[in-house]
Image (tube, rainbow, N blue to C red):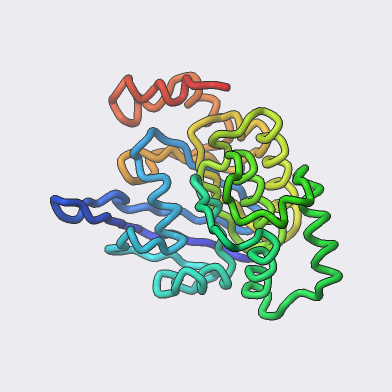
Length: 261
């Protein structure tokens, strides 16, 4: 059984006034078959955690460990982390002009699997995954994320998840910008991935609406660069009602939890 362990992780970013510590000692263990949700106010460090796990160069890990099946990934390049089994669905997916979605997906699958998938089998695999996500077949010929709507970008992230089948998926506000129908389709895609085998999910979100479709095993409250409380799905319901004030001391932060769709 695969395990992702984060031990006493401290992460800083460069500012005009010097390094600023964002993560201040994060401890978290996710095992295959588990879904962990992280909720917290803006600026608490949730996305920093996601990008630090993935290896974004902007974020400097000053101490701590990120272990995938006992192997420290912090010494790996971004592509090595992906091949080892880590996947990041970005909050704001970037455009890649000049690269078709079809070529991008096949190149990614080749890198992960170690060999190019057989064309006939691959075409069927892609068509099936696209159908599951209600994606038009013409989507494959469009350049990666270029001119995509917010919903199309998020469906593309989940399409990658379905085809690459990583050990652990970090979903950074995958529900952001989705309407009700797109949220349902994307959530169903994540649930299919969860049911597919030896996999785990770290789901970062502000809102409980996605948790109505993807039931977490554990909910963590993130505040001040660390996890300050953990509990079951009922903790998310409490946050929607009361906000983060008891964790941050600021009543203004309750507005995040009160924003519902």
